[in-house]
Every structure is written in C-alpha cells, then in structure tokens.
Length: 122
Image 1 (cartoon, one colour):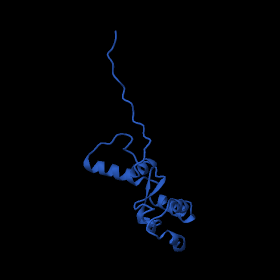
Image 2 (cartoon, helix red, strand yellow):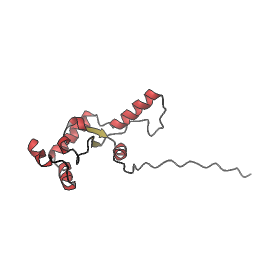
Image 3 (cartoon, helix red, strand yellow):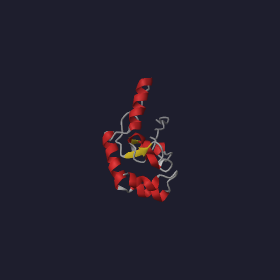
Image 4 (spheres, one colour):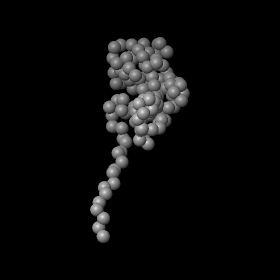
C-alpha cells in the first residue's frame, strides 16, 4: 500500500494521477470498505436530519429522508492531500446529490412547479 502511494506523496496530484488513483485496486477496495462502514447511508443527509430535529425544523419530503450513499468523498481533497488518499477518517459516504453540493456542481434536482390558481370563469 505504501509503495502504491509513494508516487502521490508530492504536494499536489495531477488530473492524470488522480484518474489513475481512482482506477486502482487499493481505492476500489477502500471505497467498498467505507460504503460498508457507513451502511451505504449518506452522512450529509443524516447530519441534515439530525440538525433539523435538534432545531425543531420540519424538512420537506425530499430532504426528510436519508438517501442511499453511492459516493465516497475525500474530506481533504485528493489532489491537494494525496497523503490522505486512503485514510478512513478522511473518507465519508455521500449520495450523489450531497456529493455534488459539496463540489459546487449542479444537483439535478428539478424544483416542483407551483400550480397557478386562476379565476374561475362561469
């Protein structure tokens, strides 16, 4: 494992190196371990619900449930901190929506359209 990470010990990781890392056997094994550790539940969804409950906030239907975690997120970014690439405490399970939010990407949630109420015409 240490021999695998040796080339990534520099200060920054290139896009090409990051892609190679994400395609590596050590990453694929670690990813499955983290998903199992977190019971395939999005840790940000769990936190959002817990925080809302503590503050007495009622969440809407979409935000009131824990989504299935399919992504493993590096808390300290991989390219900036390659030395933490396979460190359990630097990895959490997230759903796609929360992972995209963490990275500032489009979340693909389409807001519900409100129904316009018009005057009745008799």
